[in-house]
Image 1 (cartoon, rainbow, N blue to C red):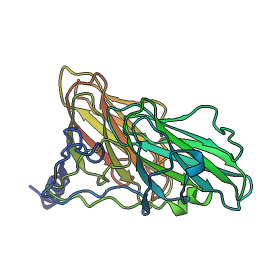
Image 2: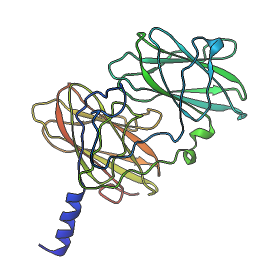
Image 3: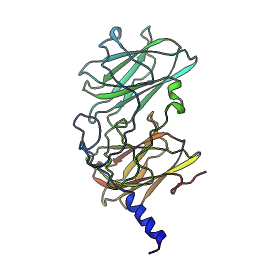
Image 4: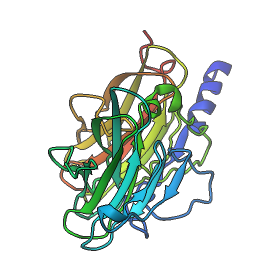
Length: 313
């Protein structure tokens, strides 16, 4: 064996990670999919730097005032609504992005509506954040220096843990959303699957991860792009379980927008399926995996950086 081949073999073995992705529910209804603790170095969690716990008021008149550009965490009260208020900044002709994530599997939809001071509902239909854990975003053109009210409730009156962030025009700028870099690929690194987008752990680029989906539950991971400009990232997944339905994969941004037109399907034939995405620099994206027919599927997943298998333009 040549010295070059030996080095390649060592690097390849160092990039094979152990991925604890059993898809079990977390004890609190949110968080990592397994609810277990790792004794090995764990992956970094992709989350906002500022987090604030809130409870909300029971009616509009008692609405809790909340800040812009801060991740708010709360929980619905059974059969009740929650009210929050926020005040826009001085920006004229501005669009605000209101994003929520339902962090509790097997619940009804989390719903949200926005009202002005005259009690007019500003969104024609309520924003729905589903129990699958993906972000849902409502974009509204709002007046400067004006107070608005947010009503939150569970569609079927159940208890749902959730996050809410009210992004100002400035808070939506790319320079104010610089991604946290993913972890280095280390031998025996364990990364746990999450049940929602908020709790997704960052995975290393250019490393193969092995996992398993089961019982119809979806799994979430995150990855951050590097500093390469005009770069294409290649995601590769393999369904390693014969006699199953397809393994479905989606990539979403922080607003819950899917970055590709069609879902990537990895069939039970064992042939690799790939998705090429041209993505901006220093940005975090979220990967959602689920078995099409709710069966148990062993899989592998790799996110290739531009300099490692994807095309850099």
